[in-house]
Image (cartoon, rainbow, N blue to C red; front, side, top):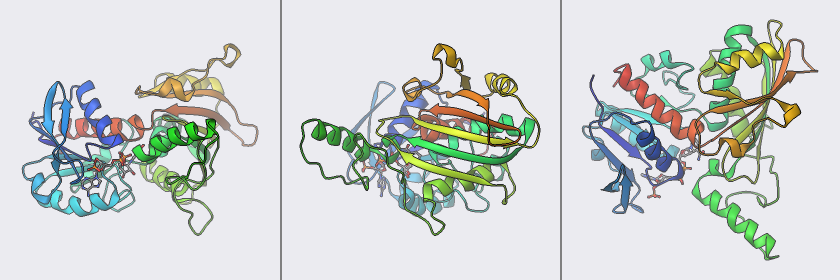
Length: 338
Ligand SMILES: NC(=O)c1ccc[n+]([C@@H]2O[C@H](COP(=O)([O-])OP(=O)(O)OC[C@H]3O[C@@H](n4cnc5c(N)ncnc54)[C@H](OP(=O)(O)O)[C@@H]3O)[C@@H](O)[C@H]2O)c1
């Protein structure tokens, strides 16, 4: 089997560092690897698998002889470099929102719609973090009972907004505890001791872009009809890492909470923690730093016919970004699609 030459683009960012960590953890097979950033971090040392690398500034020529680029350097950077990567015969697995809804660009969650990878023309998109964890839970349920309607409410950690946002939560919290003033930059409202019902900008229909990502990406990944009703409210909470979601699903067919629990117990990438009487349900801290999407609070939904409500949490930097990126890289290698 051919092993790829890999480049990690945005290697010095929150997601990029996690990608490098997971490449090591999963013992990903590669021929050569390099780490790329903007001019700001270029030249800095990068410790990977006990070896010291020097971070290089990303330029078009950086992608000569690179087979797979794992990119998390923002949408504008991906838009600049993707054509250069494709021109050189490489594949970019992109974490940004630049290409997710483009026709002909597979939007993939490894273990959910791997077959879509076969359609790629040099660009594979990694879904938004809140969509990603949801897909691993919904796919096996949809296969069995058919989703008819879906309502999702998210409780998203600040790490989803990058390193600056993590630092802002820490600094804002410290300032507030000391009774000092703090000027927020990343968020429109103070993030410490607060809950903010806005992630990304508002669109014409009153939903935010983040909310519409969940709606549109879910339909693309699960191959759902465009008119299937999905609604989302996305909320930022003062948690460093780990997204939580309250999910209400109406199914085509009749289903019980026990049946859902049993299907999720054997589902790829999902761990069920669900014994509320003994206070057993997943919280964000359970998910921080680990790979599964945790599901719990599985119960009959009182508002829908054939309805189920559940709670799911995951490490947004892992399944919502880096882990899925690395898993896609492994699939591309296994399927020899580079
Ligand atoms: N955080 C999440 O949970 C999450 C989830 C899914 C997707 N994403 C997406 O992943 C991307 C990165 O997010 P992040 O949270 O890791 O951000 P971050 O911590 O701010 O890191 C950004 C990275 O991109 C590099 N970069 C910026 N401009 C560049 C340029 N012109 N050329 C080459 N490299 C450049 C930076 O290098 P320097 O060190 O030189 O500045 C840094 O390595 C974003 O598109 C984000 O939407 C994030």
